[in-house]
Every structure is written in C-alpha cells, then in structure tokens.
Length: 476
Image (cartoon, rainbow, N blue to C red; front, side, top):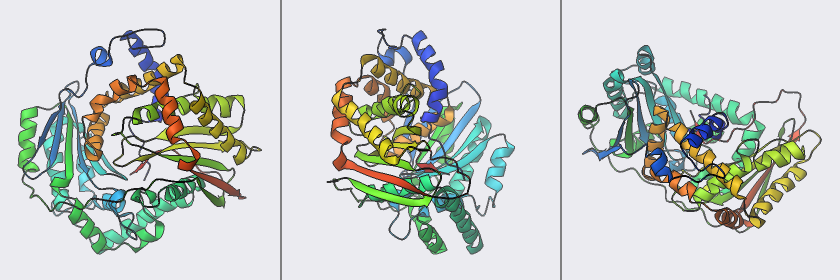
C-alpha cells in the first residue's frame, strides 16, 4: 500500500506556492519589501468555528461547519501508533489498520469500502509513529451511515485465523516492496534505529520483518481490545453539517459505546546524545546516498517554528540553498533536501539528505551539506530570504485549509499528539521568527555531537533503480 503524503507537505508546496503568493499579495501579506497587517486580521482563523466536546464515554469530538459544498469528511483518530509497540511486537499498529477492513458481524469483509464508494465517497486509513486514523470523505448525506460503520468496527471487529494469516502476508510483502528492496528506504530505517537508542521511534512504523512474521492472532486481539476504545479516540467531522443535529447523531451512535480501561502510555525518553553516530549500509544500488539527522524538539517547544523555517531555507523549491548549491551550481547531487516533522508526540529529528551525481562521492556531498549548516550557524538569513520562507509556510497552511480532508486531518493529528488549538498558533508564531532565531537554533541543534549520519555504499547490480526516498512518516 502506498505511502501517504502528509497534508502540509512539501510536494504540494511547490505546485501551490506560486498561486498562493499571488493571493497573499492581493491580501496584503508581507511579501518582501511590503508591510502588511497582522496575519489574523488579514486572513482570519480557519478554526474559529470548531465545536470541541467530550462524550460521556471519554471520546473526544471536534466538529467544524464548512458549507461551501455538500461534502463532509469523517475521521476517527486512535491514540496508538508504532510508538506504543514493544520489543518483539513491532508492526502491530499497522497490521491492525489492515485488519480493520476485515469486517464485522453487521458489515462483512469489503462491505465497508464498497458502501462508501457506492455513494461516491472514498475511504482509507493510515498509521504513523503516534496514531492510526480512518476516514471517509464524500456526500454529507452519508455521514450518519459512516458513523454507524466506524462505531461498529471500533468494538465489533471479527478476524479469523485465515484472514489474519492472509493480511500478515500482505504486510510482509508491503515491507519487502517498500523497504527490503529499496536501499534508500532501508538506509533511512537504519539511521532512525541508530539515532534513537531508548525511544520507540527507533523502529519502523511497519515493524521489523521478523517481528511481523511472528505476530499472532492473539497478539492482534489483545492490541485491538486495548487501544480501540472510544476513550482512546478523537472523532473529527468537517463539512456541510448542521452542528446540533450532527452532535445528536454522534451521541446516539458513538455515545452508545461503553468506556474502556485507559490504555497504557509509552514512558521511554530518549537520552541526550554525546557524540556523532555513523551507520554504513551496503546494498545493491546504482549510487550512494547520504542521510544525516539531528535530535530536535517538537511542536510544543518554541524553537520548532524556527526549525520549520530552517528546513524551508535549505530545501523548499529551486531557490532553496541545497538546490542552488549542491544541484545547480556545484553539480554534486541528483537530489538534496531537508525535512522536519514538528507535529509529533515526542521530540523529533531534523533530516538532511542528498544523492551524489554519478562520479561524485558521498564524502563530497556530506561535506557540502555540513558547509550549508555552518553557513546557517555563522550568518543570519537575509530579510528577503526569511520573508520568502515565511510566505511559503503561510501559503501552504492556508492552501491546506481549502481541503475538508486536510483541515480535519490537522485537527485530528494535533489533538492526538498534543492539542488541536496549536493549529491556530502556527501562522502567528511562524511570522514572529527572526533571522537571529534561525542562526541560534542552527547552532544549538545542528551540531556533530547531536548528529547521526548514514551512508549507503552501493554494491553493483544490474537491477533497475527503484523510486527514490520520499520523506514522510505515515504508511497506509
């Protein structure tokens, strides 16, 4: 099953940024050389109308009316991802996601998706390190039916030994396709495993191959019973809804489910790193690859906004520093970039990566990446460059708000890892970042003692090169 591209993601940013910049210029946004009113005054708060409540059984509910079209997105977010798994049982979160489509007594296998699609809607699910989510998007008239189906499989899933074994093989094949046969993805997995030595972010979301192979039906049943409880879930509905009537339906459907025992929470904390770590991966590949990661804080720390802009200075678009230096000017790399996830439950990693051009070495590419880090540590980013990346971040945020699904996704994700109100703070805090902040966080976090470097050492092969690595931390 394909990787899910995260909604605020950089893949969308390139396509949409140009049009958004034009829109923001028209709205008086602070394009370089122009002063403008405060963001909240210029564009308003897309989450001002959120209805936030909790059912008697502990299920969180977030509703947002968006009447521009007769559509709705209905999403259920469970506070369980690979971070909740244990040694020897990795991959349970993702395997459970697959098994959730195996049916209940009321809705048999494949019936769920078939009913959604018959009405013109679409549905799917995804798993991350921090959560697992299920969604349906389509005509608002189907909302009550989707509530009944999701509530039904929250507590009434039926999985036979045969269905479990079949889906286990499907996931093993998915892992073989996505990781075992992809040297760059394999390298990234090894880098994560080296960067974390105590925290469960060290293992892959899909799980280790041998762990997946050894999971049993009782393992799954225990996991499902522990975490798939209404008091461990957040329901998000965004679209053309009557708030009062929708809340009444929710109370009737989801409110009828009994509250379960409070699931256990991960307690592991990653200790401070005291020196650079290195991993080398020797795999069949055409070219080397370099990945370096640094431990950094997440969304609940004030430095995350400067780190978000640092990633954009380095890699957002063809005017970014890594593209200009490594690809365009020096012709060292086929690709180069930076990535940072600020919306995680626990502290995250800041990643830089590059693939050398044929004839160039990983040593030269690594040195070029470090040179760009040093430049950030020694010189403040100029006013025009800072304004550009602020505009990029702001544009991407408001563009995502045009999608019912992404607006609901942001609400559900933030409520699951922290609190949904963080979404309302993003643009003002991004706009408040200074050039001195960027220089300070680059000097504080992007240092050798906090770094893990991974090098892919190619072994010669005649096999065709697979699709390259795509930063992203969710799988379907």
